[in-house]
Image 1: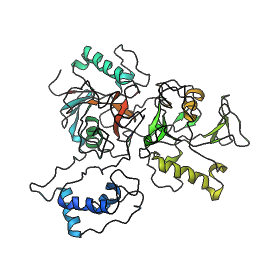
Image 2: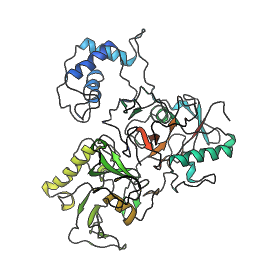
Image 3: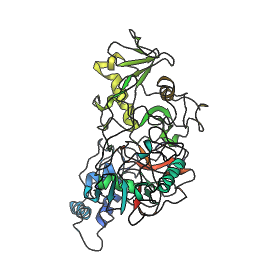
Image 4: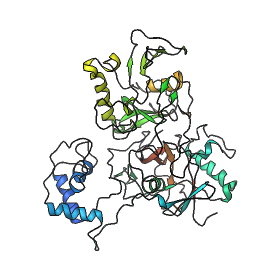
Length: 478
């Protein structure tokens, strides 16, 4: 699954350093708040900077809001007149009033969602649209169209055709269903792409962003549904999401190669996105024996899985970080983390147990990708079918999955009045408002909008990637 900077050739979530605005808050542009921002900038904090040097999260928020980041700032905070701080706080809370008062970000309000009597639709009073309650209808209803994966995911062209077929069938008596829209300008987003396109966390002006942040009241990096804790082949706790590799992207600006276990798509992510981690080491541990599956060997505890074909031993728990942090900060409750945290976490694994290492190993590492891979469906190390990478070989060879398939069954979880919600990326289209029809032109050539119900990130994706689809129709339309 590939989410990228607009206009970039990277895959999966590509943005530069992502800065998250706290939920329910916006930077106010009052003189007091601007003075704090200016002081932070003078002190060396940078908008879009590295962790510890970020203008908003590491300087402005601690001063103006009292919200401290997970890791301490690397620079001393500037000293600000208490009266200036108080004035800025009043501005942010809406107490200052007057012509200079800035509009406040909406707060979580589930009352904006009204389910129909039959539970099939959900009216969104804030957006003026009615959502289909089934957030993965394509998994059971294709309307006779090809190209839809068993999980319900599909590429963008297929999504457009599926919605058209849905309208041709007058599904639930309506013929104006559409993909959710995302505007080209969104002041709630902290970051913008190279062409000024908004992306990142806290983007609540888009339809899916409004649903996630406002109506459902979720916060980055929360998933709309619980993490998976069941089996996946010989593994446990695999997440149908993106996993980090150790390998840098071919273009260093694109961060690090990552792999989707929701679809088999290999791409790249900048370090400040939240992905999962599956550690491994090369070779096998002494005393491992053959399992009932000839492709695998295991240790006596079942904690390790050795793949003789690639000479790699994997950790059998594909989301160990959710239960074992090894005292590393920056790991989210669901086990996801940014790339820098992933590196620290693996290092802590190796240093654990008094230096003996986790499960007696001190050579745990993130999987690597290798050189450009001719097995990939796209250029370099991007696309489906990438069996040259360790994660790709695991997905396609050892787990015998195909492009577009997921390592675990599709979610049947609920979120509010919605059912079958997938903790992954959903397609969106360009539109000035939620009630506007989808524009034929995407945010960039070959890209379209998407939004993650897995962690609240809004970005763009190559139209050939496989994402999920949920739809609505505007008020007053048929």
